[in-house]
Length: 282
Length: 308
Image (cartoon, chains in turn red, cyan):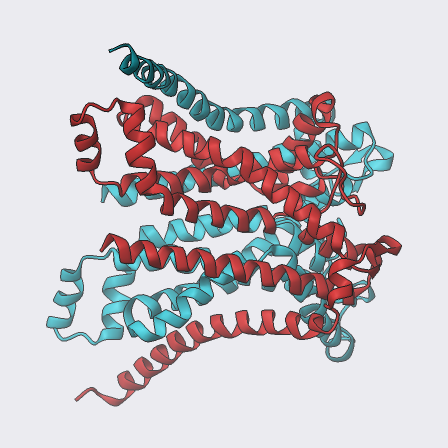
């Protein structure tokens, strides 16, 4: 048997490890629970369908929900083809070499850049320099900035998905006389699609979470966005602006509840998709 | 024969177009990085040149309306909060990672892992809101009721470096946990089996064999977490008070309000005039350089890990 003091020390460390893991879960539950409990009472049909009044400190968040939907849709519309295209090029058309290494290095670097830097870039490039095309602070400028931010996630997820497609599929297709593009379009992409979709769902989550870069590019208008060339604000931005500028915490918590509901939905969908994928690949 | 020819030509054409088109996409993805660096530096460097790098980096006051651009308080604020977050988050995260990799049963891990994933997916404004209402309220109580006698009057608003550090520590947990867990799992089974066969207990094996072998992975986890902490903007704006002043009360500075590099940019871009705006881009340049330096450390660390 072990000697006593050693035993006690080991028990202590063991306890610390257990405590740390459960504290991590407890913190999550506490944060989410606190915000949901505080904000739940404020979320009703009126809150979800009315226009905001008095800079958002009263009224609902309908235009903000619509603005968020527009923004996410526009972001994915530009980011998905670019990300998937880059992944196809890297995985299908080139061998590991100098070019792929440079491109991959570039996209990896992108992943480490703080979002406020993306905001500065988006401001200087999309809002100011391309003003004639984006109309300054607008959904277009915000979505293009967010596209740059989620690109690394998308490229990596799509590449992983493409790598899981067995070589034999490609060989079989080529042997039947299909050319390279036909093989990719009709054989490789359909088999990689679930993985790519999971990547896209996760990117949507990231776009919804983003705030700092959008403060400098999206405009923050409370009005219903009339077109993609008008300003808007997303739920995250609204939460921040209401909490910091008007001080009405009820609206901030209510917005927080809606935001958390969306994030939970996205997380569950992604997890479900991943589980399906694992089950299929087995 | 003719009928068959037509679809063939289309598919041949698309096959020919596909490669350059996809290459163009890949090139766009790459060139975004270059464009970002170009624009930040193009806008920010003039101010850096005009006022002198040294004056700006060591200047103690930031008064943009008077043309005084010293960013030392923001650099200090950023690093205080970051190191505080690492001091709290790294032991905590590492312990969780060890638990998940070594102690947890499949069933327990199935509860904890999704929770960590969710922690990573929560928007930073939610953490900010929580910190602003819950943590800062608690801080205000401590500052006004418990430490009222020792603290200078300007440290009694709840907005503080300590609040920022705590919020940030929670936010970097997923990064630390996920990467260290991978590193711990990558330690060859034979190491562990050897140690256990020699009579060490499980905890001894973890402390003396597994953790040292996973060292390089754990270091890169810490560096990545640090990058995340340095770049965090929104949650900190909401809890830290945004006062660009150097704290100078020793350990009591934990209760001082402060400002960060990122937060200053986010808060002031909205109303800044042309020169002030350029100065904010200059802060962007400084931030960019710090992150680039950190990333090169991370790359060196991983390379050494691979080499070993």
